[in-house]
Amino acid sequence: MTCAPEARDADFRSFVLSRWARLLRTAYLLTGHHHDAEDLAQLALAKAYAGWDRVTRAADPDAYVWRIMINAHRERIRRLRVPEWLTTRFPERSVRDRADHLLARDVLTGALQRLPPRQRAAVVLRYVEDRTETEVAALLGTRVGTVRSRAARGLEKLRADPAVRDLRVPEEGQEVAIRAGAQERPEVR
Image (cartoon, rainbow, N blue to C red; front, side, top):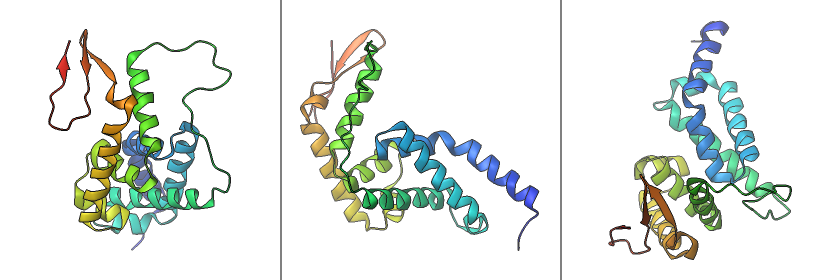
């Protein structure tokens, strides 16, 4: 059963408006570049629009669209012939932004980019998107145990990363040192 094109377009438009920020954030964390993230999110939404009837019939339309995005990201990585060097600085930038939260975000984004793609996807979907292990397994097309091991290995690598280990995040006028140990509590200074 198909609905009128106007109703279909309105339904899709409301879907996009309500999910664009989360979709773009996940795409950015997967790609590491703002422009690549926009391209990836737009590609996923274009594919979702083309099969909008299937998306709306799915048990979880959000998961369906996120799966489209993850598959598009996999295809994008497979097509890359020339290695890309991810950097947090553009050569033409002359003034460095001194905001601590931007620095922390850059450090964490850089650390995420150093993870292998499958571990990065597991960590981003599990801990940034706050999805359950079952949802992540369904999105990645793997078993729950595989998601657990990839996420655990990814977190272990993030904790071992010297840049993340020494990261200081300001919190209401205080500095909080984030330590590498999983059982240690943050030290407030």
